[in-house]
Length: 83
Image 1 (tube, one colour):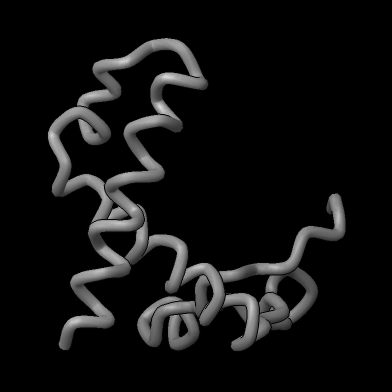
Image 2 (cartoon, helix red, strand yellow; image 1 turned 180 degrees about the vertical axis):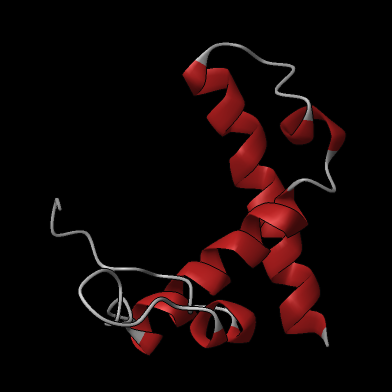
């Protein structure tokens, strides 16, 4: 094992079918705070992908890609604050 903790919780059917005994009785560690942070990041990327140039990665250079991500992020932020 590399000591990496699980970020996504185990499904109920996996818990029910987990082997008992020597191999696989203990569930993986799960941190709800890390999961919450990961969920926020994934939702942000999903909202950024509404912008075509960002979703298709049209700009191949990192600085030009970032030049598209920053205004898109500002637009999303302004939409949130307008509510």
